[in-house]
Image (tube, rainbow, N blue to C red; front, top):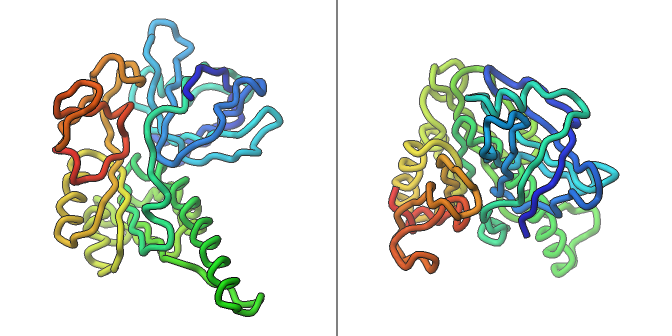
Length: 289
């Protein structure tokens, strides 16, 4: 259930040009948002009252035991305007008002035990980190179940599925690479300027690697997601994509973040869905992008 809460800044770190990581913790137990589904986001209200609307930012990592008052919520974002620049400039101990959790995230059951390909582009990379960590934990759990049911020796570690992350950056500032190296079985990189890895996009990197997979999860700018939809259709595998759209309210009231869909939306009875409410994660074949 979404609610408004007050969060305290527990730390902010510069990651790359215009990219920052901020950790938020609830100021009291009643301000804890109660957990995260990978792909969900929060709205962060600027303290500057001339900027009225919350800034939607996806959760990069969630630690359920991150503070004495509940979990800690890490967001990674690009500074593009008044709200995000204010957030990056806040100091340890400063507070902000947030609303969350918002949106529908990735269904872990769609990836558990499968050969999964994560495709992240630019600031669409951070939301995939929590998903990668959850998939890896689920695959280890399935491996342990398999070991027990097969009677394997305790010392033999089994692991179900395989997780590959293909990440696309602007240049050699590869933010979050160490974290993905710990969460995924394989990480491949593409850069726009060709300074690291494949010269091109994360889709180019995946093509070059010749990775076999059963399912795709992707997050990034719209042109990239169109490419992901085509890429997945060529291989006849499902792709779950997290759409980036400008949002006003973030809670489905203003209808400012509508995407065309294959099926009629139950809310409006037309072929539309609200990215902030029915999304941001959709099966690629279900949306017209």
